[in-house]
Picture 1 (cartoon, rainbow, N blue to C red):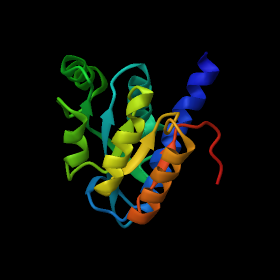
Picture 2 (cartoon, helix red, strand yellow):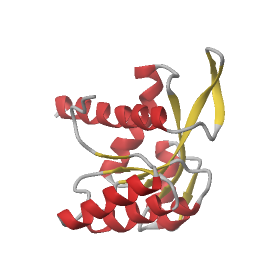
Picture 3 (cartoon, rainbow, N blue to C red):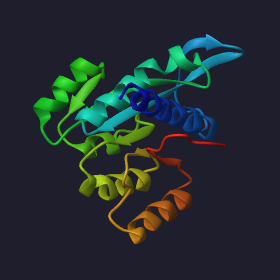
Picture 4 (cartoon, rainbow, N blue to C red):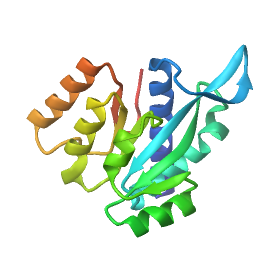
Amino acid sequence: RTHHRRHVHREYLLAVQAISRLTPSSHAGGPECGEGLVRELRIGLVGAGWMGKVHSMSYRTAQSAFGPEPAVPVLAAVADMRPDIARRAAHDFGYERAVDHWREIVDDPSIDIVDICTPNDLHFEVAMAAIAVGKHVNCEKPLAHSLDQARQMAEAARDKGVTTIGGFNYIQK
């Protein structure tokens, strides 16, 4: 069990690294690094259950594992189907705020990455909405219910120029 958690933890740290390398800086802030400020990546988590907690813990410890480069994840907002769970998650996991609906995260211009940890039947809808407004997406498995939906997601991301990643272990360059 501990072995599995270590690999899950690494998977999301790699997602932050991959996305930060491919994204022009839109939010400057954080500790000084080299010639300027370290890029902040503002995370909006959709789904505050067990997997949402795992993702949150990974983002919170990214700096201790990788240092301030290439980016510092900021836990900006969390949404859940139950607003009371979102509020508790914001408090327990360290998010700046809780919102009542996932669309508030997707529509928030300050959010860089939408991290989808919802029940499987919402992955496609949330991801497509996020991609449509230019958000990067970290989506738990399965991406969608069908190969056709997964292809639609990939095509939309390519057309919009955003980075997407699925929750897999052992990501290699």
